[in-house]
Length: 266
Image (cartoon, rainbow, N blue to C red):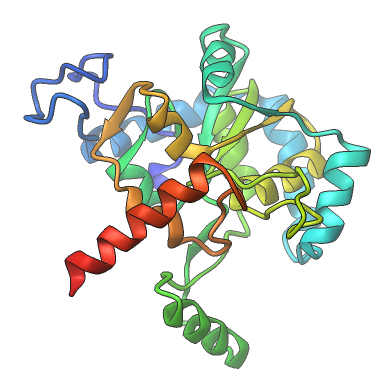
């Protein structure tokens, strides 16, 4: 898994969503696993030593520290750190400025299938390591599978992976649907998501500017911005947090996509 982190797309691909000689689908384009693996070493060298040192030190102190409750994280993100959530269009502008990098915190296998153009991978969670048995881990896995979600556990090397992916720049973090820190009648603390939890870890560790992309990868896709691979909307409801807005455009689209998926599986 580590060989894929912070990797870039195959150089033989073009740079637009609508043209790629390896794809018959004009709206998307595939990733190249060989190129991900071959470029990983070179990109690790490109991360400034000062940035690596700061994040490694933070990673060493946070590796065995459990993430607090979402309510606690939400309070710190909104009052102490004042995390900014930006639109996919704003995220694209920041990346083009050369000061920020898009970082996808979804699992590597999902990232490889489809991701926003130019995005780097730094997964917040990883597949459960069954070689390290734990009763609570089994119970958690059963709960995940009961809800149609692949069992995962926290990636303890996330901060180091993030440093490699950032290349010394600021990061715009995203997951499947983004979640939100905005309160609503049903969700006083907004809606938790992997990218918001990743943002909490990043701002707590310090060492780099951090922003959060509202709407996630789905929001980027819906805005018709450049994508690599064939995006699967049914993943919207198959996340540890099912992170979609309680109400609004992403919520309704997610429900429709899930219903279509259920009908196909019957």
